[in-house]
Length: 227
Ligand SMILES: O=C(O)c1ccccc1NCC(=O)[C@H](O)[C@H](O)COP(=O)(O)O
Image (cartoon, rainbow, N blue to C red; front, side, top):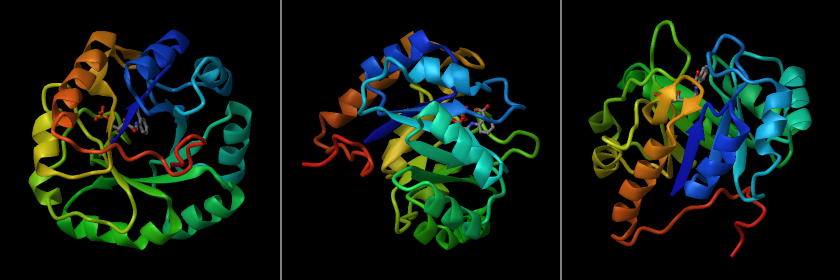
């Protein structure tokens, strides 16, 4: 299963978190976030990473030209759209960023709202479901209604986000069957400063579950993901 740890700001933490088992790291390119990082900071954070770790830039309501520039300058392998980007925008971005994973974050307000996710699946690589908050775009620490997601089976891979932590991740995965998970504030000391003990605990918990025999699903864009 993919495990993305988001909101990395410190180079030494990015390597440590990859070594603990993360398959993807997220870098917040939204300037209003307390986890915001510049292109220079991302470059420093990804410089020592093994090539199989996905490097995802998180954007909200930016232009294609702006996203493309940051992707190129920061050597990102994926883009996560966390704003109000419509399906047509995702499609155009995909055409402009060949072989870069396009993840559309959906901040779920209700079951009716969740139904709109199907409008995106043919234009993106991966969906991410996150908690809705009227003032915050992400990193809220709020969980989704997992019961509501029990039947959620989109036609593309999807990641579960929103308030996950070592304490609740197994309960979430008992109810919901995503292709991967995304965590930020649940493994933090303070915004942008990850708690490596909590990250280690997360992977210990996930390992107990993996002993049950589930196979890992790699990112199809990863250079070493082919059989
Ligand atoms: O984390 C932020 O500060 C942020 C700001 C603006 C847009 C998106 C942001 N985070 C996106 C993520 O992928 C987080 O990991 C996701 O929202 C889950 O966060 P959390 O509930 O803290 O685990």
